[in-house]
Amino acid sequence: MQKILAILGILFLPLFLNAKSNTETLGDILSATIPLSCYATTLYLEDKKGQTQLYKSYGTTLALTYALKYSVREKRPNTNAKDSFPSGHTSSAFSGASFIHKRYGFKYAVVPYLGAIYTAGLFYFHNRPFMDGIGTVLSSHLAESSFPSDHTAFMLAIAWTLFLSQNTKKLGLILIPIGIISATSRIFIGVHYPFDILGGIFTGIISAIMVLSIKEKLRPINQTIFSVTEQILKRKR
Image 1 (tube, helix red, strand yellow):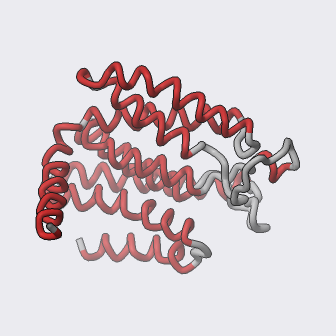
Image 2 (spheres, helix red, strand yellow):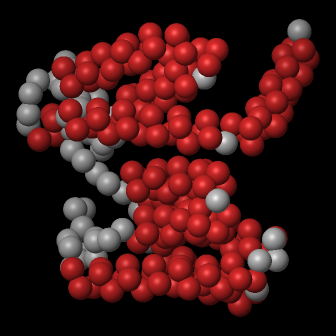
């Protein structure tokens, strides 16, 4: 066990040392945490067969990723390094999430998949229209990655969650078109491309479906949060 952890530490050490920004650091953490949590799960469950499968699957992922990196030689957008494709961070994160899915079931892989998707998003930079000299900006905005639209993802996640819940279905039906209209306005003010909005809609809907699929697993966490909040409010009174 100690040898394996040491090997994993050596593999990921360069990632942390080479981090240049908070975004990269967060991506480094997620890309390492997801597969390490998989390994920790196999240890906790004493799943020897699962450990063997993880070694093979993760090892294959690393081998293919770096073989492609040094074969394709895709230039990175922010440096002259020619090892952009495929993303090692994304490969690592999705390898771990897929292992949990195949080995223990989809409901246990929801959170790892969300983490992997978020990791992929951190390293995909897509210019906003005003960064490409397109259109007129009606509202000032930072020159940051535009895909997917986080406003759209947030609104659609809430609206779709309400729509899929029996007691709030009507409210969800009202909020879905409001969310889409609000999302479309982001194109009008010049800070998003239409593709960004579609990505946000897809992300919001998929996130809502995935979280609702494990809502019973999350119930104890919600109850704990509500209980702690209630205790804090009582003390303030």
